[in-house]
Amino acid sequence: MAIVLTLHIVFMVSWFAGLFYLPRLFVYHALTPPDDRPGIARFKIMERKLYVGIMTPAAVLTIVFGLWLMWGFGIDGGWLHVKLVLVGVLVVLHVYLGRLLRDFAGDRNRHGHVFYRWLNEIPALPLLVAIVWLAVAKPF
Image (tube, rainbow, N blue to C red; front, side, top):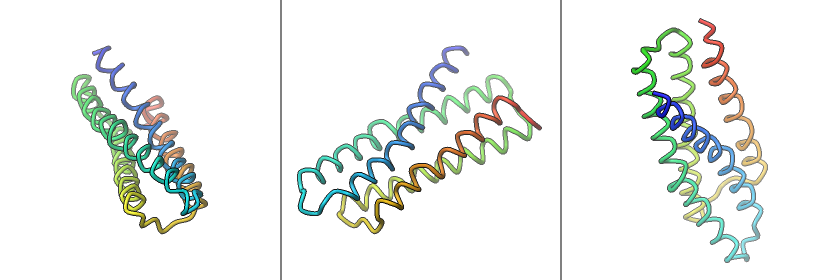
């Protein structure tokens, strides 16, 4: 089970890194002048590779190994239900970032860089803190 726990942590960290970094790429992409076609193309490649090649596999494997740990250790309790709901919110955020990625890929971005700055910090950080606190403290 130690290997499963280690893999879970590695994939979770990778997923969270992507959740924090992709909106930061969106900030820079939104700031790129429309006439900078090479810059825009570079951001599209970076965003796609991050989302498709790193974030999505890491998210799937985080959930798989998390469920494996949950069933393997027989973990239960009210704190776990709250944590699972928060992980569900992270999945919704992940899917939403994918939608924004598709908008950028199709040159249909509707938001400015300030929106992406807020998106970069506000949703993921409180969720990360809450999920870690629930897993460590198991308050109920």
